[in-house]
Image (cartoon, rainbow, N blue to C red; front, top):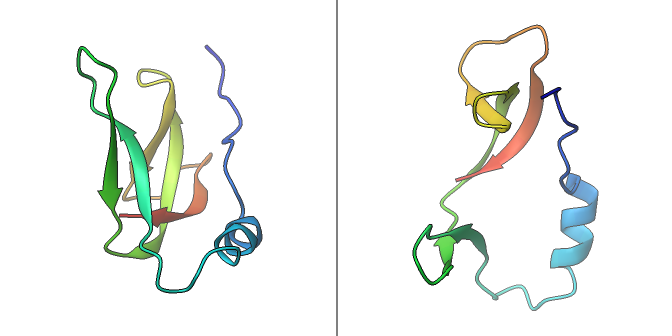
Length: 79
């Protein structure tokens, strides 16, 4: 499989989307529970920081890396 393009919102798009909600509204990230029922979990966000990611053919997704790689992308990572 070849490297795919990271499909995600930009900071500007995320700000515009969040501006449609009251400021005190909690924010969570949806994640699969990988269970029999196909449950979706709502994970809380503790922080947002810049991180380096590179495409992993093994995972067929982007993986957080500690060290820069030639094909690294800098993204805002919500944890």
